[in-house]
Length: 409
Figure 1 (tube, rainbow, N blue to C red):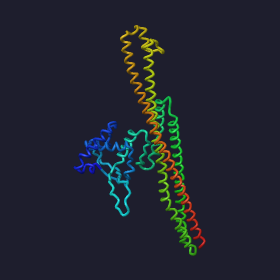
Figure 2 (cartoon, helix red, strand yellow; figure 1 turned 90 degrees about the vertical axis):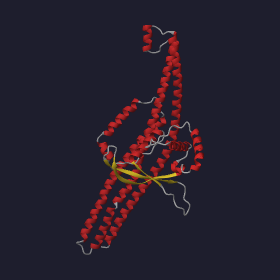
Figure 3 (cartoon, rainbow, N blue to C red; figure 1 turned 120 degrees about the vertical axis):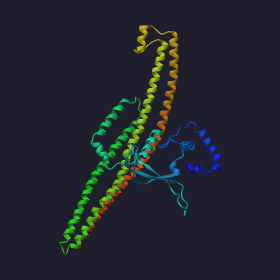
Figure 4 (cartoon, rainbow, N blue to C red; figure 1 turned 180 degrees about the vertical axis):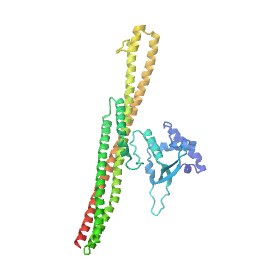
């Protein structure tokens, strides 16, 4: 897009004036961070500012572009220490979201290969830049079962206990009940989905055994048919139905895994929700510290003006031992305190505005997340139930076919 924007030299003057206007309108926008590329040219910097202004004005990229991860590929190369390693790269395709006219040719997608670590870097950037947004989790990278292996070591329990101790250290005095309830809800949702996935895994394991037992039925019926003359055809057909039924379990479990992945996604979403709650707690904690610091400075000013000390302090003790301060020293301290109080009031006002803005923006995204979560889980659970019903109907059909085979013997 940058090449297309700078291809025509005839439009350079007009484009430059438009860019200058954009830059003038965006003086308050912070410097744009470019992930994975810090060596940017002035032209690229201007383009970044233009893109930032578009985002600030509410332009949604997904309304302009279709973005998808088309495929994955294993590659081998050298890492930073010049050692050979194997890694996975993912093909990202982007194309304009405009509808194609009937008979027209769809636009050729722009493609780009990226590693998993670059997706992690992007997600970290989004977490830091937009702490009030529930950033979607990344799909699992490692093989199935790695989480269970980690949990068996007891590492997670140590981490949880450490996090609890840290949370206790920075506990806020006046927490927002909405975020407290949201944090509790995310913990309960995590527990419920974990138990649901655990139950599904147990059922799938037992179901796999039941289906494989039907494979034994098929083998026995086939062997039996070899020693029977009149019943041989019926037994052979019944064995064939049993073998087909036993082989279908692989496709069933693969389809089940698809629905389990949808549940796992929201299992990881609970971590993203808790991250937003933790960020709010940190902002609230900083706000309370600023208010406490301002109150302490005002108390110091009152004590300095009235000459009375409300609580025991080192300053009061030294005054009793070495005498009172001179008038000039008191005026100097009073001036410094008044300046500090003004700065503290400005800082408190800024923290209050920051907290209000965070709560408003975060709660809008939380409401959007709840609506999307209800829709996605509703569809996933209904589809899972329909799949189970279909699976049971296939089992009934297999045994009905076997019954017909037995009736024909």
